Amino acid sequence: MATPYIQPHSADVPNERGYYGEFGGRFVPETIVPALDELTAEYEKALADPAFQAELAHLQKTYVGRPTPISYAKRLSEMLGGAKIYLKREDLAHTGAHKINNALGQALLAKRMGKQRVIAETGAGQHGVASATAAALLGLDCHVYMGSVDIARQQPNVFRMKLMGAEVIPVESGSKTLKDAINEAMRDWVTNVRNTFYLLGSALGPHPYPMMVRDFQSVIGTEAKEQILEIAGQLPDVCIACVGGGSNSIGIFHAFRDDENVELIGVEAGGHGTATDKHAARFANPDISRPGILHGTRSFVMQNEDGQIRETHSISAGLDYPSVGPEHAYLRSMERAFYTAATDEEALAAFRTLSETEGIIPALESSHAVAEALKRAPKMSKDSVILINLSGRGDKDLDTVIKILGDKLG
Image 1: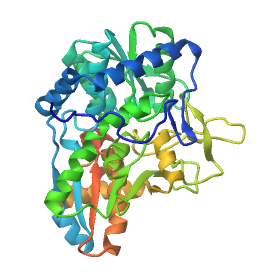
Image 2: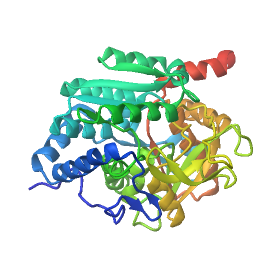
Image 3: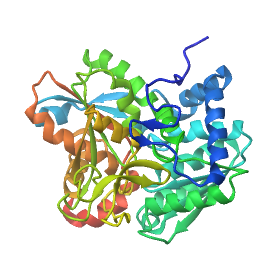
């Protein structure tokens, strides 16, 4: 038999109860515990089923376009005068981002389980688009919850979802962003748990979702590790990825987890600055972010003294989540991964810089990772290697950027 597309039990975490050290677990209403148990069992069966593995591998190759390449950012590297910068091009995957890896895997699982109706949540719209795409491919009914603020700033993605037959459901509660979209999706799932599959978009939520999403996204790192050795002749000195919920970053980090000489750097949304109350950097300030429970899992959560969830801000719709996946909290606690932040201004500058030097327009989320590389590369030797996970392309963000830059271009 060929090597499975996803390796079962490919890490020592989580444990059987879904914990990554002190983080993770299940904190959910009793009504959905049986559904989570069923999902866990069916996922394990699917991983052991050669037919499931073969179908997923076939679709990733012939439909998604995997493997995605690694590009050497030659002009950017020369401009900065330090480390060589390489880009893992998830922006070239079908739908324009890494989200399709997980959406396709979960949609296949939903079909296997006989669930005709799938629900999803989305912030930047990329997971919503990926879910609508996978549902259209497999003939599933798709309903996507999206905050009205995100709908306003991500209109191209909203249209794409509707074009593929998905129903986009505006969420008007709370901050009207990703957190609130997840709230509504979970309410829907609790109500319709018997016939509905919750296609969760990031490496968060109750077990088995953080593990399952990581496994479906681990293809990024598996490919990247083999590619960078071939192209650069060495493992990267630094691997950088943006972190919202944390799926693209855990996807690339996973392959390098045991390579202690590879520094893993997650970049959060610094917004207007981590000294202000307009950001989404969960690890930046212990006074406003500490371990807590949100959306069924224990991780770092931005909260006030009374435990109420704080409002967040980011120029990027996909990074303004007030918590982070539990495996990221675990990696940080183990000092295996380190987390920093890029401000809106730094991300926008990186967006322009990569566009002008390499002809690659990155998503504003990915621009946060690029911003960190712009700071680090000049301080590193010329034989050093930085690998950035370019998690998505920036077409979806042009409306936002146009409003900010206006006539400043040209």
